[in-house]
Amino acid sequence: MRELTGQVVQRLRTAFAGAGYTVEGVAERLGVQANGALARNETAAAARRTASGDALDTMIRLFLLQRAVPESLVEQAFPGIDLIALGIAERGGDEVRAVLDIRPFAEDGRDWWVVADLTPGLDGRREAMRSDYVLGIAPASLSLIHLTVPIKADRALDIGTGCGIQSLHLADHVNQLTATDVNPRALQLARATAALNHIDLDLRDGSLYEPVRGERFDLIVSNPPYVISPPGGDLTYRETEFTGDAVVEQLVRQAPDHLTDGGWCQLLANWTCVRGQDWQDRIAAWTGDRSAWAVQREQLDPSEYVELWLRDAGLHGTPQYTTRYDEWMCYLEEHNVEAIGMGWITLHNVEGSLAAEAWPYEIERPIGPHVLHRFERLEGLPADLTALHLHVADDVIQETTGQPGAEDPATIVLRRQRGMRRAEQVDTVMAGFVGACDGDLSTGQILAALADLMDRPVVDVLADYLPQIRNLVIEGFLTY
Image 1 (tube, rainbow, N blue to C red):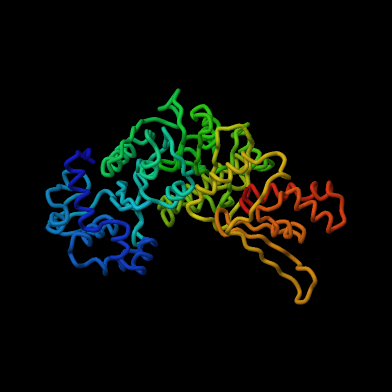
Image 2: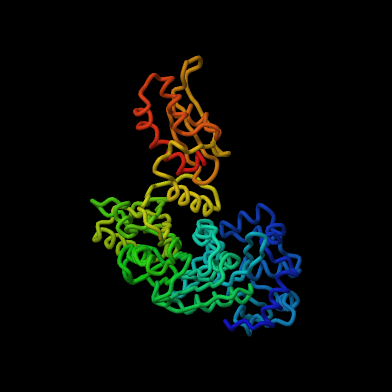
C-alpha cells in the first residue's frame, strides 16, 4: 500500500463521511438480519440490501462483502482518488476488487476507519492466510479496548499494534502514543490507519520492549501473538517462536521496568495449565510484588485449543489439518500441558500481590472502569474497617429462596448488576449488616448492634464478618 498523503487522506475521509460509511450508516443500510448474517461471514443478505449503486452500497460491497464492483461506480464513490494506484484495490476487466479492508469503527461519538487485510473465509471460502496477515477489527481487539482502564496519560505504548485499532481508542486520552510490531506490514497498515484518522502515532519496529529500551510509560496495552503453538507456525499476528506462554510471561515480568510509578500494563493472554502446577501460582511468579489481577475467562483442553486455532487458520478440511493437529498435540504433551487458560492480566505498578480467578460468566462492557475502581478499592482500603460508614451500591439486589412460610430463607444472595456482575451468598447476619449500610452508622457500630441482638461477644462477630465485609467492599457491593 502506498503511503497516504494529506490530500489523499482528506479526500478519503470526505468520501467515507459523505457516503455515510460509518458504523451507524452501515448498520442502518443493511438492517438487523443482514448485519447478523455478515457477522457470521455470510454476505448474501447484505448483497441484496446494497444493489442501488450509490456510494454507500459501493463501499459496503467493495470492502465488507469483498465483491467485484464496476469501476465506474468506484470512481463515482471516490472522486479524484485512484484506489488502484494506492494499493487499496485492483482492477479486473471493467471491475474493481478491494485488496485491503477499510471499515468503520465508532467509539465515544467518534467515527474512525481501520485499515487491515481482508477478512478471510467469507461465504465459506477456504483461503490461505499470508504469513504477514494483519488482522482488523476482531473480538480480541475489542476485548482489550473494553478492558483498558479509563485514565488520562502522558505516554502510552501499544505492543503488537497490528492494524492500530488500540491507538484509536487511546488517542483522546494520551498525549504521546507509541506503537510497536515485528511485522513490517502491520506497521505499514497501522500507519495508514493513523493517517486516515489524523492520529499522531510513533511507530517502531521490534519485538516486545526492545524498541522502547530505557523508556517508561503510564499505560502499556498489548494484544500479543499469544497462541501457544509448536515452532513452524507462520502467522505473525498470532504466533511466535517463544516456547509455550513465554511471550506473555516476558511482557508481564518486564512491564515494571517500562512503567512509571503507578503505571498500568494490560494485556490479553493465553497461559498453560501445566500438570502438577497451579496456574495462579505461575502467573504470581510473573507479577512478583506488583499489584495485579488475572482473570481466566475460558479454559480449553488441548484438543479444543488446537481445533480452535486450526479453524482460525483456515486449515479445517484441508490435507494439512491432520499433520498440523498431530504436531500441535505432541508439542503440548511434551510440555505437560493439560489445559490452556484464556483471559486477561492487569498489572498496576505499585506494591501488592496477585489476585487470580476463573470467571467465565457474563460481564459488563466496557469493563475497564470497573477494573480501575476495583484496584482503587483494594489498594485504598484501610486495615481497620470499623470506622467506615458504608453504603450499598446502587446496582445491588438481594435474592432469597426457601420454603413458603419458613421463618428464615434457605439462601440469601447479593447480586451486582454491573462490573463483573458477581453474586455472593451471605447468611442472615451479613444480609442484615448490608441492609443497615446507609452511611449513618459505622461498620463497628452496626456489627456491635448485631452482636447484641445475637447475644454474642462483639470480638467474635468482628472476627467472623470483617473479612466478608472487606471482600464486599473490594468487589463493589459496598462503597465508602
